Image (cartoon, rainbow, N blue to C red; front, side, top):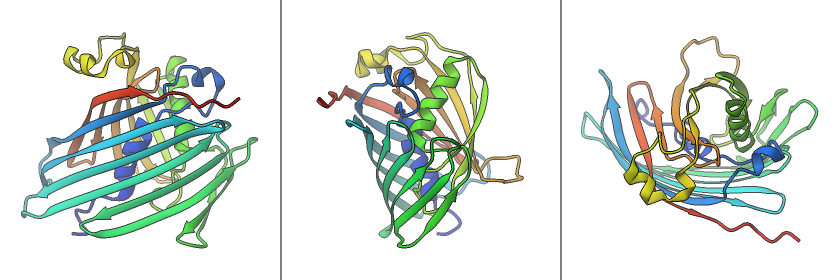
Length: 277
């Protein structure tokens, strides 16, 4: 079981690449859309030597504006089948809030694998001058993780990534902390493809199902996730997404080296903004 268990870090990244919230700048925030979406999940490529032969499931995601930031809620259910006939059922629930200035962050993750549950809860603060700070956990109680200079939280990081793509950059890297597995931050390196016109990136069938929110220009972006200060040239895992300017992510592929998992957006609806007057 241990050698084929998918870590919560690998699964929770699904939420963060999908959650594109404008906590980094007012210019980016103006284009973001609060929304609720549902994704189907299936097995993609299976490479030689893989332990996995099947995958299925779904993901629900809501991204809502608050008067002082953004809140994201996510549920993900994934069932994996192995070559030995073992079934792995993973149920992930995650919520996070990040302030508009990107300096404050709260999180809760509950990950259940075949009935074995693990929870993490806490909050983190970074200062606005250099991005350094600390993450303090309530679950497990007393755990404290220092955050190095330049650390971003996932919501602001994705907004920053869209900003860099809009500026025409093709390779960028930042330190990101999410708190999802009780460990420290990661180095995330992104390779950004050419800008795609509206209508050139998804099928007509999917566009019809998702409606006008999906009819936006965007980019294909491939991200590699590394342990901080790692000397390895290969990332721990990779994610490829279709990222639209308004924060919508119609498709996403998780690459775990020996197999991939594909998530496809099946439904999409806009969420009204709060009255903050």
